[in-house]
Amino acid sequence: MAPREASRIALPAGIRVKRQSTVPVYVQLKTQLRHLIVTGSLKAGSQLPTVRQLASFLGINRNTVVRVLADLQQDGCLDSRQGRGTFVSVEPPVREAHRARRLEQLVERALERARRLGFTPEEFLAAAGARAPLVTLKKTGKTRALLVECNWQELSRYGEELESELPLAVDRILLEELAERSRTTPAFLRDYRVVITTLFHLLDVKKSLAAEPVPVVGLLTEPSLSTLLRLAELPEGTAVGLASTSAGESQNLLRSIQSAGLTHLRPVLASTDDPWSMGLVLKGSEAVVCSEQALDKLRTMLPPGVEVIVAHRILSRGSLDLLRDLLQRLAEPPGAQAGSRMLGA
Image (cartoon, rainbow, N blue to C red; front, side, top):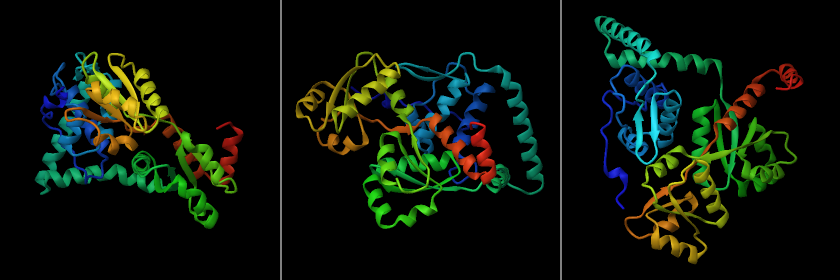
């Protein structure tokens, strides 16, 4: 089966993302897409490129695109249609159209005034973009945190996600190295205000740090929306292999798909350590969803033409909000922290 990506949709005119800007990429993309929608530059009912295509067009992380599209869908600007793609809402929120046009006029006047003073549009936009983040950085420093996971892929991805979402400077260590490091060099933990891991490893991390006063936080993870959106685009009845390094992890993949309401697919479960189940996947699957740990092994086994969809997991929004609250409490003076605990915060 030819992947749907073969049918490419043009990038909406006017979308420009600058990675070097002080304005976060997420804010740039969301603001520009919302503006094009509410002003009618993106017509109601028009289809957007896929997550993969948008990320490729703009040279940015797919998780950033997923988050932007999800937020705009929640705001009523976009509709996601199972098996078809993402479209501009037939009835986009008109309450913001007038404000968007006024903002557009304000920007045009400011650009014209800057031009008369001898500044280029790039200089004006760079100065404007730098203002708000500079105020924020002056008010909030970064808390140093230690992130613990069982593999470097998730350490890298979760670390980047934490640093982009929260005022954190994240150091990373493998779970298998934590106990030895804590035993031989216990002083290294004094540099950290909090230790972060996922719920799956929370008890092991707490056991390794039982004698240390630093708080340990376990975060919940969930399937990346980019994975679910790609699966939603597959035609009704597509046979999809769900492969991981163990039967338990494959069952978790199945539960994630079922909880997302993707009942139009025919799942085939397999683990890379079970040749019989992998044989079923190799025979009849048109696409395979796999964990990051199983990816390298699967690539050597699958025949040409079978699409491989990596089941990236991301930190849940609720977990990030709880961690944000903890960081705020850690930043309070000791007396204020005690007061917060008495109030049940």
